[in-house]
Length: 219
Image (cartoon, rainbow, N blue to C red; front, top):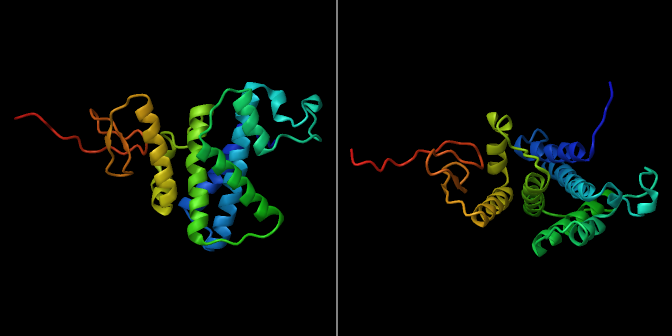
């Protein structure tokens, strides 16, 4: 059996691992579960940035472009990836998102190379906000939807919203900001509480649930 992950598949696998750790909580030890979730989402975010950079030009993901495509040479750091995406790729990152990405990198480095001390509340915030960024970046910039129709058949998305309020807040706010930017007029969803419900059908574009639609007919 051949095992192969391209950049996007590799990123998606790590982010899916973080989602499962938060939503299903098969790992009962919170410290271990959140540590692994932070590592997984940090790895996924870094690879998403590199995949977006690869779409600008494959050579750009190498630190020294002259060594492309040698696997013995280093690929770019998060800082360089952000810089090249902005200066060469024409992307614009909000300052808060750039800070989030760099802070996530620092946290991952601490876990992998030194020591890490935090609280459950802080760890939930780190992974929740990082996931909120990752899922929207993947969809907006790479066309990858982690919660398409098939995945909404199970309870993963609902459990994720319930298990991590920081993720629910980040994901909802990012969706609403995007909808407002394109002039969408939606209703509040009774399930995920996002302004994402189609006023005609009652279907939520975010979580997939169908809401009751008010009947304004006089008979």
